[in-house]
Length: 61
Image (cartoon, rainbow, N blue to C red; front, side, top):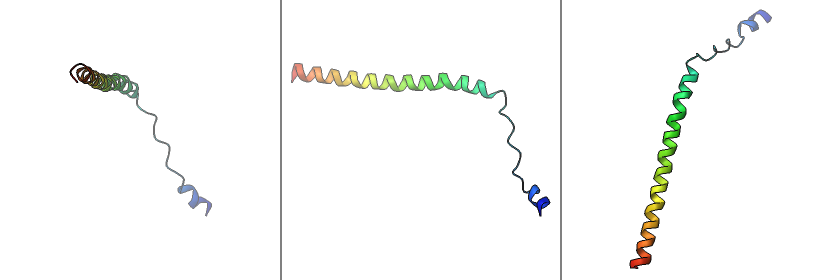
């Protein structure tokens, strides 16, 4: 019975990540930064538009 149990042992752990993983993160971070910058730009543009609209209302009301 014991011998049968030992064959049911869990599979060996997966091999360690390949050395190319760090490069992926190096590439990933600038991409994420660009995405973040883009979304920030979008919000800045939105608030600018809102401010412009508010100014126009205040002036021309």
